[in-house]
Length: 202
Image (cartoon, rainbow, N blue to C red; front, top):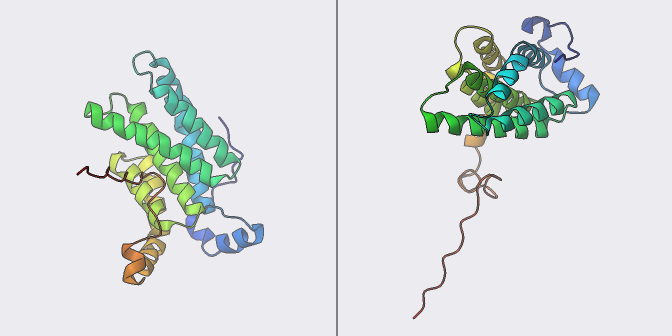
């Protein structure tokens, strides 16, 4: 699995350059340093992790879906389809989290790695869409389970780059009129509206 990745520059060398480049391109994009970091991590981890998951599908059939969904997320990343990238990565994250809750722990290192990859892809997608709050939240999700090494370094990079912007976005939401903040236009797409109770018979 190889990505066509630019040479990874130091984050400080990129300050101020990404906004102008994205505007010129006329479309959303994550910060180049974050994109480069996640792509490099995917190249390092995903082929091995995917192979380990496929080899154990008889014992854990649902895990085969994780590979399919994460591959879909990576294909969307290559196409700069950030909404789909985030959606497919979110499916992996949700199922891996349910597995953790069901078993009490991940039984293999690759399960934890898949969860962290999904979190970082979700963070990258959120950054591309301009949602720094969600990006930092997903990076935090990877950081919590990361030992010292590339996953933790990647998560910290997201926080370093986006924390100020996330704070600004939270402050802007807090300053909205009470009615708008307390009662948004509708529920999240993942939340079903409650059904109306049947009328009681006399």
